[in-house]
Length: 469
Image 1 (cartoon, rainbow, N blue to C red):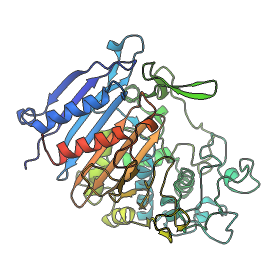
Image 2 (cartoon, rainbow, N blue to C red):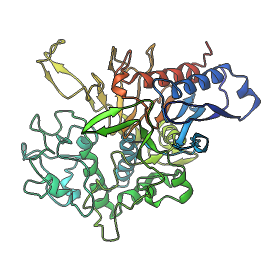
Image 3 (cartoon, one colour):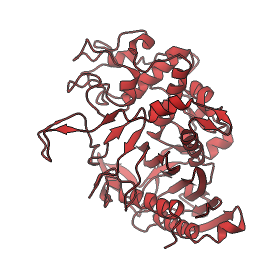
């Protein structure tokens, strides 16, 4: 089957749960118009965004087939005018989203670059980079390494928090006796470092701190130097520093959710409630000139604060597919890509046999998402095509699509970055927020939300398989 040119789609969404779809379709060649699978995909993604019962504020998508981008589509509004829907700003190809935990995969690219440069070592005691001894007080003799931090086996957890504003020092949250240590919620007593998987955000604050200490550069600026600038990507981890035009093109993240008398209340027919990147609220700097580099890697959000577009994520995906090469430039060595994407943890449960009393080597579930984490690399999840009603990591309805990548879920955004580098296929979606409680829309064959299943399956069926039926 031929590979069709990219088709860009923009659909403006109104507010209050009633979506007016105004298509602005710009084909790149006459051939794009004639591809029925593209027209069908446009229609399906528009309908998902504009659902009367499960509306999305915005949606940005991208698909890669045979190592080339074959589809990009944007739907809904990056900013919604609550008084006049006609003044809402549609999402476009360059609209950047706070991509949540997909940021972890991007941060991992920076780590691997520093490993190449001899600034970091994956299996060295991370204390050597921090300048103080990092230990789980339950296992004081066991070192913690970057590899453990990156594959979530470090024995850290988020119970004590994972972000502290300046001028906090991360050491005070991790070392017993520190003023931010509290009851020691940062540490698990379940198993020693390296032995047990528990997904967490806090390790990425430690990673960011180690990166700063190893280079003497502030994390957000370091990531620009290492990855974003060499690839000519807009965005970054500190939106305050973005040019005004880029700030204007940030997607506001929304939910139709309010707090009433301390309770979470969703109202699908109510107003969209801005969560993050509301243009009426000016961006603020996260650090001043007095910030001590290497003191608090949580500050710029290595775990979830990156602002990137689906198009930029597509370039990162192609770079990984191409062994670290981007537009004729080597961003990472092939060996670095291989190490990063190699499986380094897989779920097992000795003696479980379907029973809850066995001995697992990690937490496969995540909240209400059951059997969701089944294998992991360094800063990337491995999707093994495990399926079940409201459980498993299956990416498409009919199965057969194993992949690596990362998911994101924060402040209304949910997103996916998944690809199979052997088959040269990949899918990306970024959702700007739901009008409904996502937990009320569980998946039919996976632990994804049902609307996420629909987006992924539609992208795969139409753009990858190129089926119009």
